[in-house]
Image (cartoon, rainbow, N blue to C red; front, side):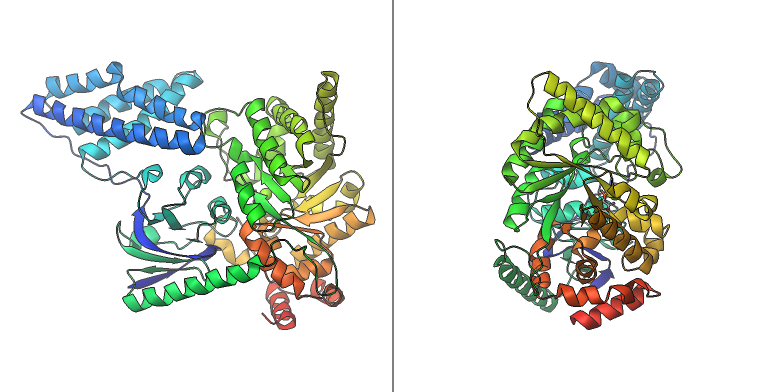
Length: 571
Ligand code: PEP
Ligand code: MG
């Protein structure tokens, strides 16, 4: 038995067999062969097994993610049946008397290079398809197992270097009981997705992939951030008990599901949820969310081969708005870039993607993409209580330009006779220090602020949110952060506007009393954090916490802040 420490990214406990999600070692040697017919037969078998796997994956993708995702696998199947690729491999085996692995690799590489060099996006995509598919065929030739997360059909804990948001979206909750990764922090997107899927997760363990083998028995403790490998029976029993206690606690929390969020001295605040897809709305309602404070629309754009159409987007936005009824839904416009890539946009590689061409910067330049999204949102606005916010706003000009495009599209739609709500609030994410500092100026023009601390902290302390090496600098309670947050809230209130927070800090039990005292109006968090937060707020006095404001804002370090709050709130 051994233990690994990591970051508790999504609460709960998972106990199951390990499933390693890593591309296996596909290295091989060139070998001379004597029996070409037999070698071709080996190749044919590997192709057939790969095809039948891909058929299953395609069906799975169609059922769980829709036709469009399934199309990716149709393209892969076409590659495997294409005589233009397969015949040259067979010819090579025969004419050069070489093993199938070598013939496959040489031929595939030749096509990949040829397609990659073409000045045609469609052909370059084919290169990517060939790359993907040959890995699978190679794994079968070498008799090593190739991970197929979509095909998992027994209870497992997924072990990976990292999970991309689209990997995470493909995990079937019925079988994937938890996951653990080498890299990432509480605010990396795999962690955020784990919380919306309500799968226990421990991230940033640095060495789970090295320490765990396929089939090992593993406990993922997403409450305390621990991974236990091949535990003894006693340890399993104690974790089963811990899991039971956690379930009991959840039942206690659930009693507040339909209650408003009110502090001990009667202040009402809104507890709303962060979502990534329309499917997440069920979790929001089951966890007593009073609205959606952040709908990250970029997941609509990811894990596919082209931009979503206006119609597709409209359907997703409408679905969320309708399910939420008259509860507020804050939709954030496309925030791509940083760790959220869109391969089909073919953006040039950057030295500092988090400081680069992303989010509103990209949308204002690619206004074709932006206008399509705005139209879809405006059309959906009549189906619920929509608020729109722009991400990564650094200057007032950016906000004015984005708002002008929104109003232009609104005017066009109205002229076309399309009904659009007149009550849409337009706000911004405050996640760049420049904006937090001049929040007073912004407050005159925006309808609301939503503070994005995941980025605000990384930009204020200059500490990459994905990098465990500098994670000691990623300090939500740093007095600089508290002062910026305070500035934003004061600025909003001075203009009669509201201020919310949709970064992970909003659901943190040390931060909640601070934010309540600073006067935050809306707290947006993972759906599963809502009921524990409501329970906590019920026991807090806003007036008392507000009286600590000056003390907290003038403290020297994050540790001082944390110790003070722990003492005052008995944590
Ligand atoms: C944030 O930066 O706090 C935020 C909510 O946005 P994201 O995590 O998607 O960057
Ligand atoms: Mg952000």
